[in-house]
Length: 130
Picture 1: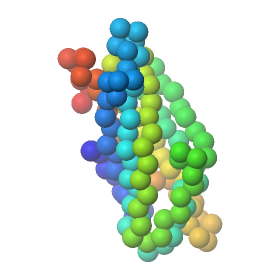
Picture 2 (picture 1 turned 30 degrees about the vertical axis):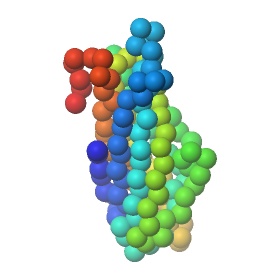
Picture 3 (picture 1 turned 135 degrees about the horizontal axis):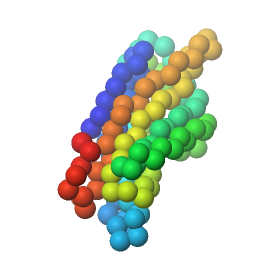
Picture 4 (picture 1 turned 90 degrees about the vertical axis):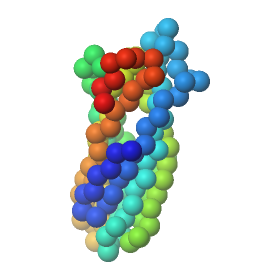
């Protein structure tokens, strides 16, 4: 598990390889990742947007931006947490992901909550990145 706290917003990511969706002979590798966003602060916040930076083991980078996560823009009151699972494919057996969530407080103040850098490692490679 990987974890990072920014302005009382704790983000934990637990990636795992999806063997049943991956086809290594065709250079198709798929991971899921479970994210927990925990509001450790005293203010209510809403996740407005996301930005992911994905890098495969060849150094090829892609950026994915959009509204919310899994079709939602969750509101987290103090002490509340939100969990979701998503996934990503790569054409290489390993890589990295990182990014941020744009959060907004009730008074309209915005800040970026950092998603920790985490590795995506296939069990079919001996040179794991992490």
